[in-house]
Amino acid sequence: MRQADLDNRGGKIPDLTGRVALVTGGTKGIGRSIAEHLLEAGGSVALCARTESEVQAVAAELGDRALGIACDVADAGACARMVEQTVDHFGRLDILVNNAGLGVFKPMSELSVEEWQLQIDVNLGGVFYCSKAALPHLVASGDGFIVNIASLASRHPFRGGTGYNASKYGLLGLSEAMMLDVRYDGVRVSVVMPGSVDTYFNSREQVPERTWRLHVDDCAAAVMQLLSYPPEAHVSRVELRPSQPPRKA
Image (cartoon, rainbow, N blue to C red; front, side, top):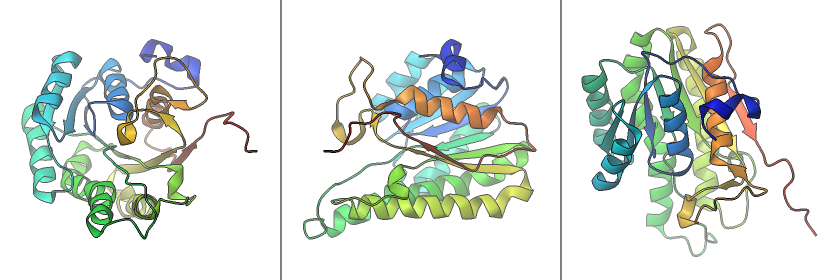
């Protein structure tokens, strides 16, 4: 599904002509779908991934208004450089979509300290680092927006999710506190919390046919819906679920 079909999913298409967005984890899955929708709405998009060759290849596929930047969001300095590179290239930054994330799913007794730290550094630290670096530019925009892609795991713990749940619970708290901090600076902060999504997350293959899981375009539609509201209106949290998941026995 592309922008032309967005209204069929209940989404609205904002006019992003002249606006600039930065999408972390933007080369595949949810992040790539968001980047594609932002471009098709008229915006310019910087997208990042950890691998230089991957992010440059995807940016080339997306066209002249896409900029690829290699960045490890667990590195605060790298996040600051990414934001500055975005602004140097496009002249401004209006929208930040913090999408990069990972999961290591093991019982706590088997989860290593390094695996715990990695999830906290990427899923939570990366959002803080990118948001802090982007904030002065989003304030200068006059109508800045931060959209954090969290998870229903931000509210619902599950076995084997010690590190992942902790990072996503933290992301929900960070998002809602940050919203209160910056709302009078002309910056809106929203968090999107999808349930099961058919995506490449955690090395799982994405299947082409529609399944009971959410599609990555459903998540992109939620982001576009958020961006379509006028400055006086703000949806701070979106919980997005499959409508008919398999029944539990």
